[in-house]
Image (tube, rainbow, N blue to C red; front, side, top):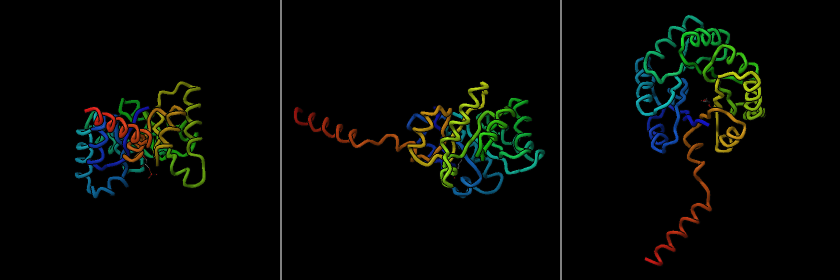
Amino acid sequence: MKFFIDTANLAQIEEAQALGVLDGVTTNPSLMAKEGITGKDNILKHYVDICNIVEGDVSAEVIATDFEGMVKEGEELASLHPQIVVKLPMIADGIKACKYFSDRGIRTNVTLVFSAGQALLAAKAGATYVSPFLGRLDDISTDGLNLIAEIRQIYDNYEFDTQILAASIRHTMHVIECAKIGSDVMTGPLSSIKGLLKHPLTDIGLAQFLADYKKGN
Ligand code: G3P
């Protein structure tokens, strides 16, 4: 399973990259705003800065909600850097734009996916990635992991190439459950990646090894 980090924070992206397990970055307008990145030029420059840190795919989201606007914006984003993947909302014009880009070899990530039907449409339109938001489903007492499993089954039934990018990951158990289901990618906060490191028996065992070494040296 690929690990993406879901942030626009350069320090966190650098930290995940330095760990050696990072395969890409996802961003969205809210994450950009959280870092205080505003204005078109600053936003475009920030995408390039992210691409220069990480070696993998970087999702950059369009703001337009009409087909023509998404195509114009998406083409501009895609021309910024070869690592950019154009992120499109799961609406009718987003699906049309997804087909437009996939026909032209431009990679896409269809976002704000909350149902298996939406994921099926995104795959039919040739999306590179589909982003089901599992945490936000869990937030409203709906089983987000079940959606990931449904999409996995549908994509496997028809051998769709679209990769399942489990998004809105909140914690390490989401990561582990997505890996068990066979999600192609997960994107989450740095804490969901670093949390995988932790086990008290590792800490106790290491302390014992070091103490025993000291006794003999
Ligand atoms: O990748 C999607 C993500 O940014 C949404 O996460 O935590 O805002 O639901 P969250």
